[in-house]
Image (cartoon, rainbow, N blue to C red; front, side, top):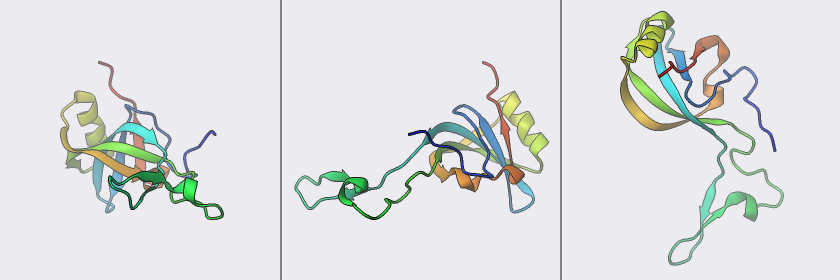
Length: 122
């Protein structure tokens, strides 16, 4: 079943960078490592513990995270004073990896506070 980015969120692809304004004065840089849909797993009281998708057990309740798009990201340092400085660091490959494997809902990246930058050519 096809999915879409949430209304008002940036649209991106794996390998793209997102520059995101936070606190009204700082710009953070992220690389999109993957775009994913999640499903909650429930632990069964077995030995060893078995994990079962929540959607299998529920019959009338929508499972958690149903239809939501999430981004698997790498966050970088430093924090930038403006998007131009962040864009320059991305294109010059001068970012320092801070956190790898960060999972965030795509809704956390609204178009009016973000800029998507295509990955620099190798």
